[in-house]
Image 1: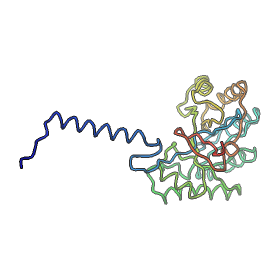
Image 2 (image 1 turned 90 degrees about the horizontal axis):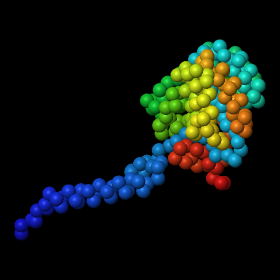
Image 3 (image 1 turned 90 degrees about the vertical axis):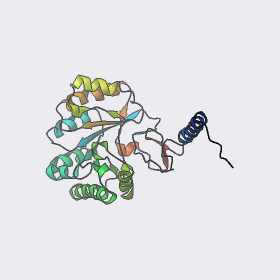
Image 4 (image 1 turned 180 degrees about the vertical axis):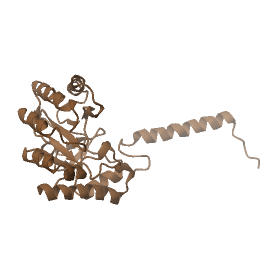
Amino acid sequence: MTKKKISPLRATKILVIVALGLLALVFSLPVAQTVFGAEKMLPIYSVETPEKVVAITFDAAWGAEDTDILIEILAEYDCRATFFICGYWVTKYPYAEKKFHEAGHDIANHGDKHAHVASLNFQQNVEEIAAAHTRVLGLLGIEMDLYRPPYGEYNNTVLEAAKSLNYHTIQWDVDSLDWKRPTPEAMTERVINHKSLQNGSILLFHNDIPETPIALRKILAELKNKGYGFVSVSELIHRGEYKLDHAGRQIPLSQ
């Protein structure tokens, strides 16, 4: 029996139908899943809350010359900030760490050596977080449970390592980009008019950048004028059962 050949035109049509079917399958899947069902984990970028509050956060991995002025400005606006501290920074500037803590600010984990953690394996990530945890525990006697990966890098391995140590991984949804050294005016404009600024936003700054304290005073004043209050990340996040939407916004399951 002679096999019937498929014409080139018909073969093309079949391939198109198959391709469309695969595309339909992909786009019918939840955002957090791949075609093979592997879940893509997300950190917390912001928090669903009816209260008009935001969290001011700083990554501390460089110097410490602006420690006193940051504490002064934050106190002026009744702002309890969250400082994500590198382990080696704790050892180099223990007095600054103590000052932030004694001023009532939240102390959180930024890894031990500011490594590119997305390139590390699970055990190496655990060691990075645990080493910084041990340094802070030894200096301040506190057990941290908030972690921000250096450079904002993460993948499932990074998040699983943090979770294994009972840490919540925290990113941000409003970035001041202060590390690029914009003018204080440009930094203020960017933060105050940021498209993502909303109840439960987490704002990112860095210490030891000359422009940041100048802009910070203006930013906090403008946020207050808009009706926002300030809370630490520890106060902002939900500790019970929650879900994350596609943008990493934390939503309590009770809602």
